[in-house]
Length: 445
Image: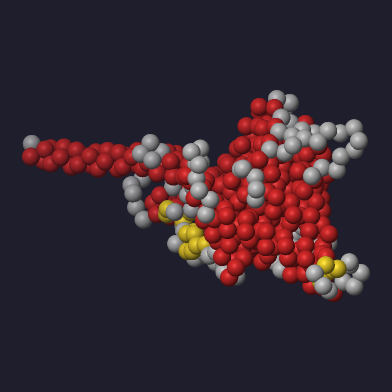
């Protein structure tokens, strides 16, 4: 942050209007005016660059569109582009959807990320719902057009974000979760060969699915579908890939936290139509309790797994720590507590749902996460986070790193203007001194 009178972009130009003027009390007023103009120019320049990037999305050359999408992502990560979005919301959305329809895998990844950032910027409401409704069919079709892992993962993350923000009712969220599930469990026709999903795709699908599950009331979901989901997640704990194990373990912990297994147990106990086993206990109840016991044994084994020769120590440590937390929750009911610094404040989570939301949003936003947590009201509401408000007066401006280079570096326009002004003052002062010296010499003569 810096005083606006230290950001005089056009100081040299404005000072040249009156070469004979000395630095007086009017310089402060002029500096304030120049600083306001400078800041307005900076905002205009930013909007102009974003306008150019959006215009470039109409270009035929794919590399040009990719470069434009990268610029848009950088801009949305570094600042919340509310004013720009108000003007170009629909244009940006539909150009990104066109990129997903016809672009390369790289272009699809970038366009998917822009759509997710757009949803996070507009926040909950009609625009976010429009993003979801317009994007879902395009994303669903893109899943069918190829199985490249990076592209599929980007589409899954995009779908998770736009549903999280724009899903106004449980049916919309459940529909998106079903689309995700079909990425790894596609409904095949007789002439379609199943493509085995890669480990990164499975991991991303489970993470994205869990992220949306945090917003759902598990008591409203179909028990039959849930039993299939829990069985599949349990099977993932036996996979070799540790990222899959961790994602599946966290999903199962969330299911426990939502009380879904208890729902099954209660429903099975009250069912009078089920055939029975173990006396009067329905078969479904016995199966669910057996599944729960199996998951606890798997968690215990993974929390103490020994590393092999090819084991990455960091991955092994992450797995052990995660499943120790999961086992503690399964057995004692204690959820892991997380605290991270956001500026001078701390953001804290105390449930599996909050932790899954935090990790997913941190991953999606990357370097823009801190900025969004400090200024994005949607995310602040999600986590109940209230940052310290630092109110800026009319003579102050929050500078990004690029603006600091532009306005504070020794070679910046501002510092060059300041140097010219000081040199001019020095010359005027020296001229007055020479005049007085000449006058004194004349008197002596």
